[in-house]
Image 1: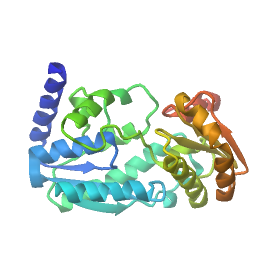
Image 2 (image 1 turned 60 degrees about the horizontal axis):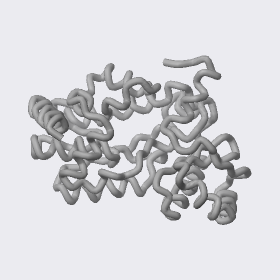
Image 3 (image 1 turned 135 degrees about the vertical axis):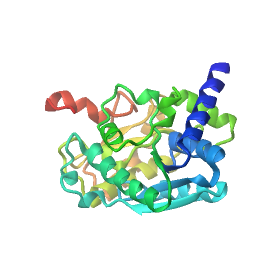
Length: 273
């Protein structure tokens, strides 16, 4: 615990050194903790910026609005429009780079308009090592990663979030809906909506951590192995509803939920950043 408190103190000192900051706020575990810490340290010299997009479910956007209203943090919502970006629809292996470069460029402009000196995002030490092309955009645009600077892991962030009373301390991990598509498969508004509705159904059925990966007209469901049996018990309803959404085939991934499972295809593609 002492080591954890040391990291927390290091984070607050780092945030204080920034003077003012615009936080890229998705409402997830990491960005919520970062925003709360930044606001506690810097007060009204902090703004939150959230992207409104068809790759970001409305339930997540609504959570960001409620949190900022409760904490009295100035909140700016910017339209992201990823599907209009050149190359994005084709879902290349550097898709996340294209998206982050676009979003952070917009946040930089918003920050300048509001007299804010720095931009910050919520990557932590667990994000080192996996394939994350978005981090290239972070480096190129000099976006700060305070949680990483403080040496905080996901487990640390959840523990500290619980300690300071944040409702997100045990929130399931989330990534934008584009991450559900196999690289090279065209991303469309219609297919994003299919994935969103499918995951919402599983959330409504109280599954703790879910992903619905899309492979053309096939849905590959990822839940934790502990919830396999319950998934099978709800099989008929899930299949029926998924087919209404537009899926032709509905499958369960026997490996279970894991982050970045689409990155497993990179070795087949022979491409990496």
